[in-house]
Picture 1 (tube, rainbow, N blue to C red):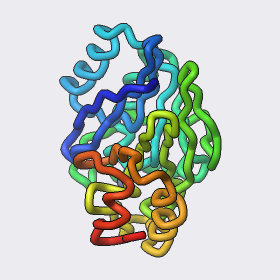
Picture 2 (cartoon, rainbow, N blue to C red):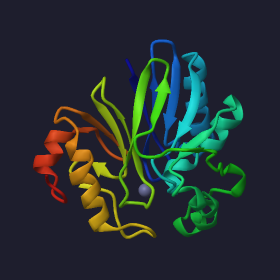
Picture 3 (cartoon, rainbow, N blue to C red):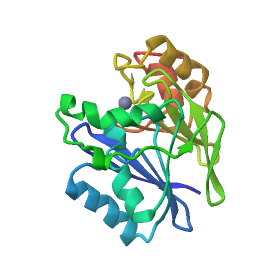
Picture 4 (cartoon, rainbow, N blue to C red):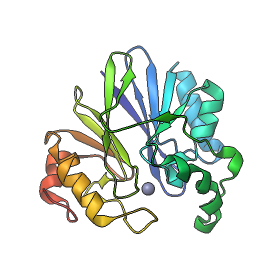
Length: 215
Ligand SMILES: [Zn+2]
Protein backbone atom coordinates (compact mmCIF):
# COMPACT_ATOMS: atom_id res chain seq x y z
CA UNK A 1 0.00 0.00 0.00
CA UNK A 2 1.24 3.46 -0.84
CA UNK A 3 0.81 6.39 1.54
CA UNK A 4 1.17 10.07 0.76
CA UNK A 5 2.84 12.95 2.57
CA UNK A 6 2.09 16.38 1.10
CA UNK A 7 4.28 19.49 1.29
CA UNK A 8 3.34 22.89 -0.10
CA UNK A 9 6.47 24.58 -1.37
CA UNK A 10 7.71 27.83 -2.93
CA UNK A 11 5.95 31.06 -3.77
CA UNK A 12 3.80 29.32 -6.41
CA UNK A 13 2.54 26.94 -3.71
CA UNK A 14 3.12 23.67 -5.51
CA UNK A 15 2.11 20.39 -3.89
CA UNK A 16 5.13 18.12 -3.48
CA UNK A 17 4.27 14.50 -2.71
CA UNK A 18 6.37 11.88 -0.97
CA UNK A 19 4.79 8.51 -1.83
CA UNK A 20 6.01 5.67 0.38
CA UNK A 21 5.33 2.03 1.18
CA UNK A 22 5.51 -0.09 4.37
CA UNK A 23 9.19 -0.80 3.73
CA UNK A 24 9.91 2.93 3.73
CA UNK A 25 10.79 3.01 0.06
CA UNK A 26 9.55 6.18 -1.58
CA UNK A 27 9.41 8.32 -4.69
CA UNK A 28 9.12 12.09 -4.66
CA UNK A 29 6.74 13.73 -7.11
CA UNK A 30 7.39 17.35 -8.17
CA UNK A 31 9.96 18.39 -5.59
CA UNK A 32 9.29 22.12 -5.32
CA UNK A 33 11.40 22.98 -2.28
CA UNK A 34 13.18 26.24 -3.05
CA UNK A 35 14.24 28.13 0.07
CA UNK A 36 16.84 26.68 2.47
CA UNK A 37 14.14 26.12 5.12
CA UNK A 38 12.11 24.17 2.58
CA UNK A 39 15.11 22.04 1.60
CA UNK A 40 15.62 21.32 5.29
CA UNK A 41 11.94 20.47 5.78
CA UNK A 42 12.10 17.89 2.99
CA UNK A 43 15.47 16.38 3.89
CA UNK A 44 14.61 16.22 7.59
CA UNK A 45 11.32 14.52 6.85
CA UNK A 46 13.03 11.85 4.75
CA UNK A 47 15.73 11.33 7.33
CA UNK A 48 13.55 11.33 10.45
CA UNK A 49 11.19 8.81 8.89
CA UNK A 50 14.12 6.72 7.61
CA UNK A 51 12.69 6.77 4.11
CA UNK A 52 14.66 5.38 1.18
CA UNK A 53 14.09 7.54 -1.90
CA UNK A 54 14.19 5.48 -5.10
CA UNK A 55 13.57 8.12 -7.72
CA UNK A 56 12.43 11.67 -8.35
CA UNK A 57 9.42 12.02 -10.64
CA UNK A 58 8.17 15.11 -12.44
CA UNK A 59 4.72 15.53 -13.93
CA UNK A 60 6.23 18.28 -16.11
CA UNK A 61 9.15 20.70 -16.21
CA UNK A 62 7.62 23.99 -15.02
CA UNK A 63 9.78 25.81 -12.51
CA UNK A 64 7.53 25.43 -9.47
CA UNK A 65 7.59 21.63 -9.86
CA UNK A 66 11.32 21.13 -10.33
CA UNK A 67 13.19 23.50 -8.02
CA UNK A 68 13.89 20.94 -5.30
CA UNK A 69 15.10 18.02 -7.42
CA UNK A 70 18.83 18.70 -7.27
CA UNK A 71 19.11 18.96 -3.48
CA UNK A 72 17.40 15.60 -2.99
CA UNK A 73 19.30 13.90 -5.84
CA UNK A 74 22.63 15.09 -4.44
CA UNK A 75 21.92 13.64 -1.04
CA UNK A 76 20.41 10.31 -2.10
CA UNK A 77 22.12 9.77 -5.47
CA UNK A 78 18.87 9.08 -7.27
CA UNK A 79 17.74 9.84 -10.80
CA UNK A 80 15.06 12.19 -12.05
CA UNK A 81 12.46 10.78 -14.43
CA UNK A 82 10.17 12.71 -16.76
CA UNK A 83 8.60 12.49 -20.18
CA UNK A 84 11.31 12.70 -22.87
CA UNK A 85 9.22 15.48 -24.46
CA UNK A 86 9.88 17.67 -21.42
CA UNK A 87 13.60 16.92 -21.27
CA UNK A 88 14.80 19.76 -23.54
CA UNK A 89 12.75 22.24 -21.46
CA UNK A 90 14.77 21.67 -18.27
CA UNK A 91 17.73 23.61 -19.64
CA UNK A 92 15.49 26.63 -20.09
CA UNK A 93 13.94 26.65 -16.61
CA UNK A 94 16.65 28.58 -14.82
CA UNK A 95 16.84 31.05 -17.72
CA UNK A 96 13.21 32.15 -17.37
CA UNK A 97 13.18 32.07 -13.55
CA UNK A 98 14.04 35.75 -13.28
CA UNK A 99 11.08 36.68 -15.49
CA UNK A 100 8.84 35.04 -12.87
CA UNK A 101 10.68 36.88 -10.11
CA UNK A 102 12.06 33.58 -8.84
CA UNK A 103 15.58 33.06 -7.60
CA UNK A 104 16.57 29.78 -9.26
CA UNK A 105 20.05 29.40 -10.61
CA UNK A 106 21.55 26.87 -12.97
CA UNK A 107 23.34 25.05 -10.16
CA UNK A 108 19.95 23.96 -8.77
CA UNK A 109 18.87 22.58 -12.13
CA UNK A 110 18.69 18.83 -12.58
CA UNK A 111 18.11 17.34 -16.01
CA UNK A 112 16.17 14.06 -16.12
CA UNK A 113 18.13 10.92 -16.97
CA UNK A 114 15.19 8.51 -17.05
CA UNK A 115 12.35 8.57 -19.57
CA UNK A 116 8.70 8.10 -18.66
CA UNK A 117 6.41 7.06 -21.49
CA UNK A 118 2.69 6.37 -21.54
CA UNK A 119 1.91 3.07 -19.85
CA UNK A 120 5.29 2.71 -18.14
CA UNK A 121 5.19 1.21 -14.67
CA UNK A 122 7.21 2.73 -11.83
CA UNK A 123 7.86 0.17 -9.12
CA UNK A 124 7.84 1.20 -5.47
CA UNK A 125 8.60 -2.16 -3.91
CA UNK A 126 5.51 -4.28 -4.63
CA UNK A 127 3.44 -1.21 -5.46
CA UNK A 128 3.14 0.45 -8.81
CA UNK A 129 2.52 3.84 -10.36
CA UNK A 130 1.43 3.79 -13.98
CA UNK A 131 2.46 6.66 -16.23
CA UNK A 132 -0.46 8.34 -18.02
CA UNK A 133 0.43 10.73 -20.83
CA UNK A 134 -1.78 13.84 -20.41
CA UNK A 135 -0.40 16.69 -22.53
CA UNK A 136 -2.06 20.11 -22.78
CA UNK A 137 -0.78 22.16 -19.85
CA UNK A 138 2.68 21.33 -21.13
CA UNK A 139 3.62 19.18 -24.14
CA UNK A 140 4.95 16.18 -22.21
CA UNK A 141 2.84 16.28 -19.05
CA UNK A 142 2.26 12.95 -17.33
CA UNK A 143 0.12 11.76 -14.40
CA UNK A 144 0.95 8.89 -12.04
CA UNK A 145 -1.81 6.37 -11.31
CA UNK A 146 -1.91 3.86 -8.47
CA UNK A 147 -4.85 1.61 -9.39
CA UNK A 148 -4.53 -0.58 -6.30
CA UNK A 149 -4.89 2.27 -3.82
CA UNK A 150 -7.24 4.28 -6.05
CA UNK A 151 -5.23 7.44 -6.38
CA UNK A 152 -3.71 9.53 -9.14
CA UNK A 153 -1.20 12.39 -9.09
CA UNK A 154 -2.53 14.80 -11.67
CA UNK A 155 0.09 17.55 -11.65
CA UNK A 156 -1.25 20.60 -13.47
CA UNK A 157 -3.64 18.65 -15.71
CA UNK A 158 -6.47 18.60 -13.15
CA UNK A 159 -7.16 20.68 -10.04
CA UNK A 160 -10.11 20.74 -7.65
CA UNK A 161 -12.68 22.50 -9.88
CA UNK A 162 -9.96 23.63 -12.20
CA UNK A 163 -7.46 22.67 -14.89
CA UNK A 164 -3.94 23.83 -15.68
CA UNK A 165 -3.46 27.00 -17.70
CA UNK A 166 -2.78 26.51 -21.40
CA UNK A 167 -1.25 29.89 -22.27
CA UNK A 168 2.34 29.00 -21.40
CA UNK A 169 4.68 27.83 -24.21
CA UNK A 170 3.64 24.37 -25.42
CA UNK A 171 0.23 24.62 -23.76
CA UNK A 172 -2.93 23.87 -25.72
CA UNK A 173 -6.55 23.91 -24.56
CA UNK A 174 -7.99 21.31 -26.93
CA UNK A 175 -5.12 18.97 -25.99
CA UNK A 176 -5.73 19.24 -22.24
CA UNK A 177 -9.46 18.79 -22.85
CA UNK A 178 -8.72 15.57 -24.73
CA UNK A 179 -6.33 14.38 -21.98
CA UNK A 180 -9.03 14.94 -19.37
CA UNK A 181 -11.91 13.36 -21.31
CA UNK A 182 -9.98 10.42 -22.74
CA UNK A 183 -7.51 9.64 -19.96
CA UNK A 184 -8.10 11.23 -16.55
CA UNK A 185 -11.92 11.01 -16.56
CA UNK A 186 -11.71 7.35 -17.60
CA UNK A 187 -10.31 6.47 -14.18
CA UNK A 188 -12.79 5.11 -11.60
CA UNK A 189 -15.03 7.80 -10.05
CA UNK A 190 -13.79 7.25 -6.51
CA UNK A 191 -10.12 7.69 -7.45
CA UNK A 192 -8.53 10.36 -5.27
CA UNK A 193 -6.75 13.01 -7.35
CA UNK A 194 -3.70 14.58 -5.72
CA UNK A 195 -3.31 17.77 -7.71
CA UNK A 196 -0.29 19.90 -8.49
CA UNK A 197 -1.85 22.84 -6.64
CA UNK A 198 -4.71 23.14 -4.17
CA UNK A 199 -6.76 20.48 -2.39
CA UNK A 200 -7.28 16.89 -3.44
CA UNK A 201 -10.48 15.85 -5.14
CA UNK A 202 -12.13 12.79 -6.68
CA UNK A 203 -12.37 11.96 -10.36
CA UNK A 204 -16.15 11.45 -10.36
CA UNK A 205 -16.73 14.76 -8.62
CA UNK A 206 -14.62 16.61 -11.23
CA UNK A 207 -16.27 14.77 -14.13
CA UNK A 208 -19.59 16.17 -13.00
CA UNK A 209 -18.65 19.55 -11.49
CA UNK A 210 -15.43 20.84 -13.03
CA UNK A 211 -16.35 24.21 -14.56
CA UNK A 212 -13.77 23.93 -17.35
CA UNK A 213 -14.06 20.37 -18.65
CA UNK A 214 -16.83 17.95 -17.74
CA UNK A 215 -17.09 14.37 -18.91
ZN1 LIG B 1 2.87 23.86 -14.68
